[in-house]
Image (cartoon, rainbow, N blue to C red; front, top):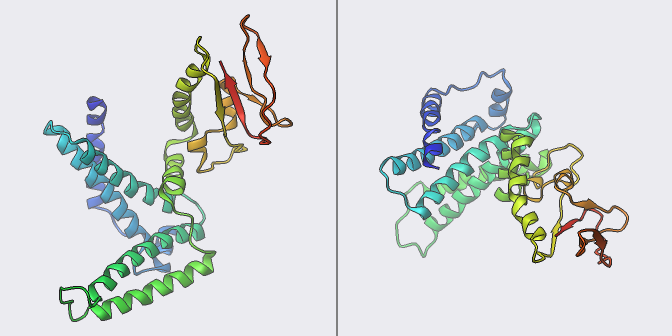
Length: 273
């Protein structure tokens, strides 16, 4: 495990050099066009911040490994921060459509503005014992104006993009960077213990699944649910007309149908031992 982690250290060094020498995109480029659409927090600046955040937190894990001192809860926190930073960058830019890129970038800008406004309101609140800076009220008012402008622009673009970390950002970024074969390989690895449980001699019972029909398209939730084809390759049976018709092994080794449980879902699969 540690050897596998150490094998990534050279990549961290390369990313350190890349990020230290990152140049602004040409104005005529696709990224330059995005930056002109919202120059106050340019999308390329957000991308660099996300990548720098990822690299710094991974480097912190590297230092812990080098010092031979690991703290499980602290290490997982560092790893999560790295994942979020990198995933947000990929999520913003992986889509080819410029409008969707801008929409996703502005969605994150809006969340950042909202967080800063909450802090600004706290600073200006009368219950706060600390005396605010003389320019604090003007700064918060300027922030409110920017937040209002971002929300109006997002309305024009069709509203904020769905941006839950576990439902949207991380799955989409993972699918964009790893490819379907790697993702499916992980799903197959995770599926094996469940199949073994259902097939054990003592009678493991029924293994159910609620996969998706992706029709060859990438969908964020298939990383969690897996796809119909994956379960069919593992021996599950699809019943488009009857919903779910479970089976189990008879004592002589043949397959006998059990009474239909009638859940009324056309995309359910089941395999039992």
